[in-house]
Image (cartoon, rainbow, N blue to C red):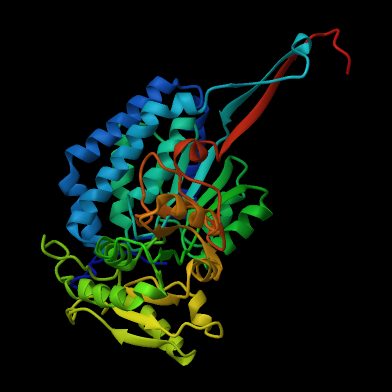
Amino acid sequence: MAYATTNPYTGEKLKTFPDATDQEVQTALTDAYDAFKAWRHTSFAKRAEVMKAAGAILRRDIDKYARLITLEMGKTYAESKAETILSAEIFEYYAEHAECLLKAEKLPVANPDEGEAVIIHQPQGIVFAIEPWNFPYYQVARIIAPQLSAGNTVLLKHASNVPQCAAAFDTLMQEAGLPKGGFRNLYAARHHTEVILSDSRVCGVALTGSEGAGAIVAGVAAKALKKSTMELGGSDAFVVLEDADLEKTVKWAVFGRHWNAGQVCVSAKRLIVADAIYDRFVELYKKGVASLKAGDPMDPATQLAPLSSQKAADDLRAQVEEAKKHGAVVEVIGAPVPEKGAFFQPLLMTNLHENNEARHWEFFGPVTQLYRAKDEADAIRIANDSPYGLGGAVFTKDTKRGVKVAEQIYTGMVYVNHPTMVKADLPFGGVARSGYGRELIGLGIKEFVNHKLIDVVNIDAPF
């Protein structure tokens, strides 16, 4: 694995970083655990000061941080700034709420005279975070903000194409006042994953990434009897019922599929449209995609950025060709994209019938899968015909109907009249091949703590 910064817009390799040595990994583990031994006893108020400081630094230096995202993985500068602010909001959320989220819980007991039972939530050690490139700050913030707030420490293995973003967060937490060893970025080699997870000081691993990577890391964690949380792929359904506000729905569909150049786990990848409005929807959707301007991601006018790397574009192109072999019909939509850079021409894919295995694939880029649904029941059937279950959306003017449809879609999150969002105060996670566990709010902060029962019992109480 080569850690390197390669600008996706220019193709220029700007900087490389050597893999961590075995000794550096061992030193990081020791430093992280030494920090944990003190940090676990640090008050919530002191931890909150560090979280607030991290959020304030991100806001203060937003241009510096945002430029680095755009440089390394290519998303538009506006999206990079939004991600930086979102990361700040996550730190600020836990600064305000961590103590309340982890307060002791008194349990109701059958006979109060026998004693008092409470559950307390205690940190357990080092959390190993393995994170992807598509949201270089947000993915890290949503792990380290809750875990540091809970009293754990964190070691990070970031994606190989965003090494400077990883280093920037290392510097950020030092500047915010986190004690040495509390958080450390490691340019870890592949074999270091097993080394780290086999260490008794590590309590678990949180991974966001591909299904294949998740399966490997989850297996390593299981072998070491360590807890894991997995946020993997997704092929979200975007269900449009016949009574939807068509023009507003189309605008959200265009945005939902193409933000971050379509490289989002919860992107609106499968558009499932009711037969009664299908033709008009497709007409408006093509027009909307055609209005997207591809170009320099630092240009404020750019709406469609390059993919994260030339390899990502080449792999997606090969996947589309394979889908064609299964019977998929592919249509070019939108204006031509620049030849220079890792751009990918937006495509519309149909004929994804029940014998076409491509309907079960995740296309990580601006490729839209389109389905015509006979009615509401058929739309639900198509939505659930997927190995994934991360996010989803239902569009209808009847919100009560939308909620009922959402309840029948097997996925971790469903939004009514909006594409799947990422917010500091909303949980994130999926089911089925999209993984397990939850991140953010109280669910996220409790993933790697010990939920300890303490029961004070009257000595004369019967057994």
